[in-house]
Image 1 (cartoon, each protein chain N blue to C red):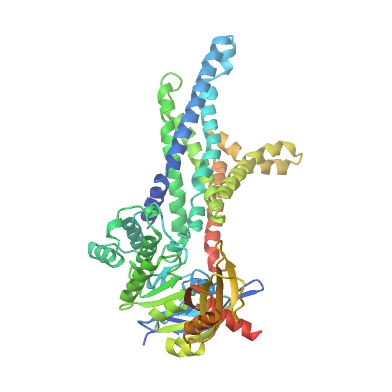
Image 2 (image 1 turned 30 degrees about the vertical axis):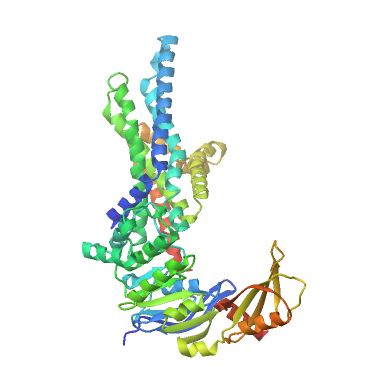
Length: 303
Length: 252
């Protein structure tokens, strides 16, 4: 079977600093592959090397079986990239920018393709308005439409949901699910839950090195997930074991946080403990640790 | 491909007010200069003794001076046009759209240079009114006008290739404009330095490297291959350097 993306011992150094070292992984045809790592792990640098925007210090990248060579342009219409910083001409309308992208790839935007793009990315109402006047959510969709319009087989997205409001994130996820029926998608993120929702396979990197790569169920077991319980109390005088006193607001309410390394439900325990000690809880909520916390735990435990 | 790229460039240039402001300012300032030259000349010929008038010609006092002044204005205006070329693409990271598509570096560079040239041509079109005003009164020689505009055109091409090069170096438009202005001024000043050196070869070299000598010869119509080689070299060198800079991403 054809492999859309094969990375072999990819490394990048700037002077003395190793940004990425010895990355090897594969993306299967028709899959959504998550590329996970905390901020500064080397995800964007890797993506630049995967798309030929940057030359690796060593190692190789193969796109559909062909070795990627930045001096050639034979691979360029195979990859659609949505970078973290959206490459948009704010003075163009979505129509103009899609037409321009097609011309860059020596194609013509016919009306059926145009309608398809408007429909899929929900661009009907903004299609003739300058991109500079549109919201972040629309810009993100136009960015993706731009990367997709010339029909690449492999789509690479760098932190696509950063800075989107929850509604747009849900819509964006739907678009990706729809795309995955016909395309192979690699998408980077630092949010574990997002990757879990969408991806079949995942590659995790930290400090430029691979911590794991493969089907998500298998990797999920390797990384224990934790959670945080936050709660507000009226009285700041009390002591609660294991809890970290975070901040006091103007009304004298105190925010506490307890870190748990397992996934069991601890809300009841916390509530009962406070009830016993007559500490009034005003509000209580949980937060699942994101990947960044996981990596912090991981690196701290190694010290 | 170049046609599509050029169309896009012109769209971005003319969709902002900057281009219109610059064109209006250019024609306003050059218009004031033209008026001034005319007034000074007509005042002058009324005051001086008719015997002395023999050494003063309308072409020297008004036409050539006008074109020299227009050239001076270009020193300030061309960097303001070219500063956006690549700097803005770097800043918005839209440059990657080209590198992710089959577009070649030279195609993009040429489109940027041509777009700047078209803006400059629109500047020049606005100045065509001056020769019309004095046609038949002060001048009636079409070849003089052609050589003057040809001189301005070659100078513009040289300045554009310098401006686009500095724009390809940085994502900061202001830095790009300042570097371009300084470099063009340096090209002017080299030939002034020629008088300071006592070494014959050095002073000859400095005189050749300066752009003013060549520009003046072109204006006066005493055109020779030396001058053409000079302009072609400047344009070629800065275009070559820009291409090298654009291609560097493949090697770092």
